[in-house]
Amino acid sequence: MKQALIWLCAATLIFGLMSCDRIFPSGDLVQKVSDGDTIAVKDAKGSKINVRFACVDAPEIPHSKKEKQSKSSVFLNQFDWGAKAQERVQQLVNQGGDRVKLNITDSDRYGRKVAEIRLPNGTFIQEVLVREGLALVYRPYLNKCPSRNIIEQAEVQAQNSRRGVWSDAKFVKPWEYRSLYK
Image 1: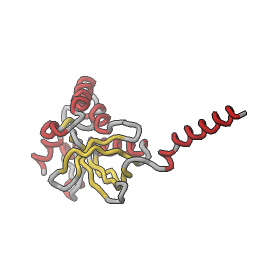
Image 2: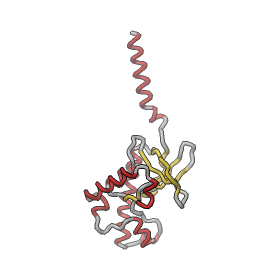
Image 3: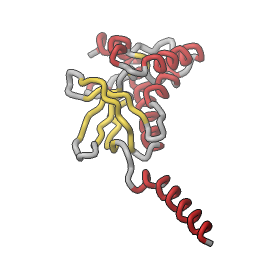
Image 4: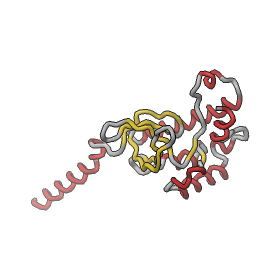
């Protein structure tokens, strides 16, 4: 009888600890998916932080009135891929219960934190986006990317499998789009 009680207490403790993450969620709360490589989070202290994804660059979404009204095929192509990247980030964030874990690597010129972003289960969001061809490796800042090898391997796989933007001969890389059209 005593042994059964010990087992019952141990099982209750183990199952209780397993569900602690649901009661006391870990990570930062995502408030908004701004685009395919930027999110806004609220940290444990309640501060809002704008976070730019480290290692990658995702296609653009329209920001200005001119962009939103554009009929240009270059603009529309960029914005279509940008919307797909943004939707995928939103799906991933939803999967993680709107929580992410940040590994902040830098700050950018706009005051955003630059970070590698993982879901509570360890899924690396940038890797998923690159592997699916919804973001590209952003080489100018790759030296500040602790998971550089993972990201580069994901891109090679996406290119070889012609996934996402790699299947689109008309796609303009995000940094080229910005330098030409912004």
